[in-house]
Image (cartoon, rainbow, N blue to C red; front, side, top):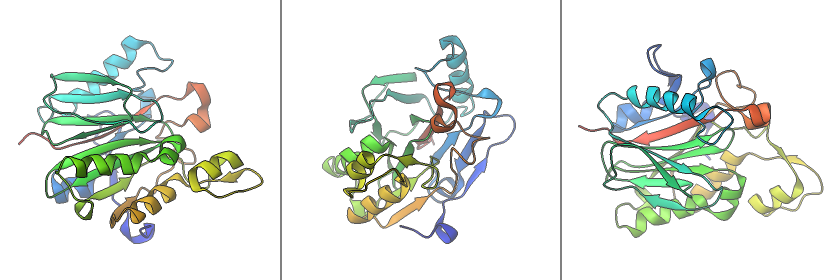
Length: 255
């Protein structure tokens, strides 16, 4: 695991004319990629299957899409299952594309912005600077236990586009290890460790360890927590069924 005090990817708040958003500025400056996550300020909620009226959510999606101006023509979101289905996105129609049953997306197409919806789960950003391939994974404890990280990496390699030695991974804004208390059965399924009572579990630390075991050296971890930093972020653990959803996003913009 990288040292958070020295190796964190920087994230900054976007300007007041955009929807609430934190951009991963290092990746934009170094690699030209657009990456980040929306926030909860002003009740901004992109949860397509949540409690908000569909018209309200779709209007907020339009604000989100418009904030990227002419850099992206396709916006991909999946109806997530907390599993390990990761699919390629190529030659998609313009506008918002909803894909059933995917917890992760991969693309090499410029102008396609990948998104996953989160409210405590970890958005995992994958980038191969050499090929321009990107991937975005929705990683809750079930997906992590089932191996969604290795599924995404293996698909990049199987396509002959990336090698894991080139990959960079960022474990984004999510619930932190101090705030995520789970039962013994969850600890066992995620880590393989037998415990006798509820414990806290650091999902991002588990993902960073998995990445290291898979041979990935470029791993960074966000410092933000959706629970104890809950003002700017949606959190299911903190707000229950009233929690909205944030969209983590990643893509190579059009030239």
